Image 1 (cartoon, rainbow, N blue to C red):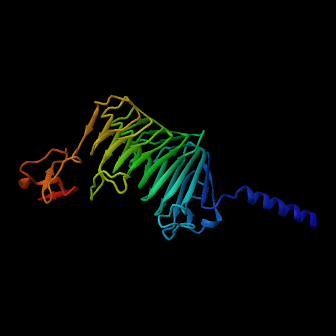
Image 2 (image 1 turned 120 degrees about the horizontal axis):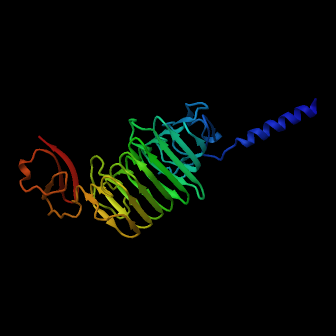
Image 3 (image 1 turned 180 degrees about the vertical axis):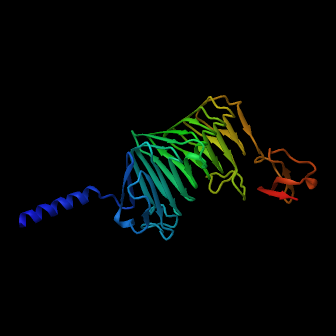
Length: 330
């Protein structure tokens, strides 16, 4: 009897160890119509699983979470979500209020009725595409959301793996704030609207990005809501609507609209451009306009200076002392 109890205890301990995950980590493993979600013990009181064993995983991060051993910017205390496995009827939804990391570690997701990945976190979300992995995301058609990969906050793609995205409903990749790409390979293999759509600014530092078969623009960059800003050296708090290609290889083919469309300016500082660089559009190129101290320049939404600005009604863009704001005149 004693030996049996010890053997049972050893089996239980072995099973528990197999489900153990590192501190600060949530592991999501997709398998057909189910998913296994393992939450590290040190953050278990901050992350709530609302989807049970469903392959449509829904995780809510507590608003009271302030980071595990956090710094003032929470860079050392963020929660890491690791996705792997596959599902032809699955998705990942995360909701939070602090910086987070999402590791794509060989995951294939098709969601017939929504986004494959939806990150409802308005802070910086780092998407790490793990080395030597291929990750594939596909969404359904005619649904009411913005992208197959949809992020509410600042989105930073990095890593040395590959991400394939097909947006059957709207955009392939959508970021409500800025979007940066470094090292990784991203292939948007089709999109009903834009291949990549973001706000504030777009920056590609390195890696390989291919966009093929977009129903609208290859990449569209919008200025977000007020306040608008000028370009800054480190792009901290920048909201220009600018497009930057600093390195890597960007290929854009077979798009219905423009290869690149930006509310701000388009800057090629480096990298390889495999697209028609004349097939671009700048909607509000006012960043370089100089205004004398105390003077105001007024523009329409296409970036054209308005000579009789005092009589202009409707939505206009005003630049004064280097600051840009969008106003409504009645």
